[in-house]
Length: 227
Image 1 (tube, rainbow, N blue to C red):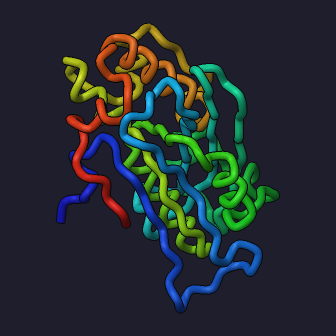
Image 2 (image 1 turned 45 degrees about the horizontal axis):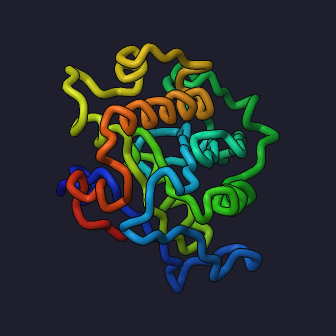
């Protein structure tokens, strides 16, 4: 069955606690998210670009091993959040090779239960941005669901946006970086990917000056989906 996010560029995610699912008392009933009027100017919005490194690609059973998020206002960085997470399982050699993160690095790292609520504090009240946002949004959704956190964010996907606005053969972050002459501080590490994603977003907005408000993004998206 196709994912409901498959063709969406701008979507929202919502996570709800199941009645039979336990969660730490401190965050039971917690709510996090953002809500803006369609006419709100993109330039006036706080934007948090975020990225996860994970134990695999299936958000239903795999876990986050690194969280990265950078908050921007008027395109200026105003805050940065970066944290390794102990997933409670050993990493595959493939993930170690891709990310450069190994089990020793995660041994003394905090758990998702300790990190995800802090991430919500950092993201709250902002528009989220991620490259291939379906992947990161799903992981945020499932990790939050496990903790009983309700969340509702607007998330802009730069992968979907680039496919609509640019005429390239490929739209992975590496190719977009090459297209715009950008370099990575570190590829497949959260902050390194985030900084390039942010620059890609600014370049696309500058090249498409008609995209001024959230309403202007509407032609590029389907109806927002809640999961």
